[in-house]
Length: 207
Image (cartoon, rainbow, N blue to C red; front, side, top):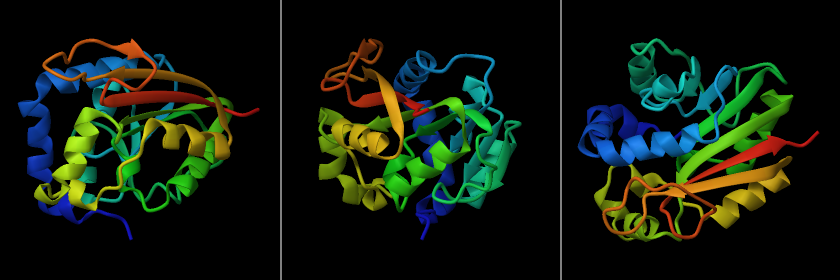
């Protein structure tokens, strides 16, 4: 079952996070921009209210929450109501697939990655942004998950777990960025993972 209840009931609270945490939001966007070239046809899976797709120039999205779909459409994004494990798109269509803080809310991550692989062109790639459960922020979210409408239903992953599942579902050539470091440093972006809380992984489809 899609984990949509909190997104339907607390969609305004979801959007308020971006206003209250504008510095972190901008840094996450910058980290994603490092790995997403312009002029390519992309799909955001778990597009939410369009807070990432719109500034990144992604015109097509999919999400299981009707409230979120309506918000994203208001930003000019073409959004389909649906789930990550069963993407209603033809095979080998998109240049890339983006998922930002999506993987912790899907029911079957392996199937999600397999579906992303299916709809990618032969030289396509996937870009995933997520909170590493081994990071300081990830551990804080896990400790306090019952206090959040959203994270109480989430399943968090480590960077190593994500990389292993990507390899298992037909991806390789990993590029990794990390940001949101301990303390107040929200601007720095570094290669790799292990220190930053927000990790971005780009992986190419095996050919």
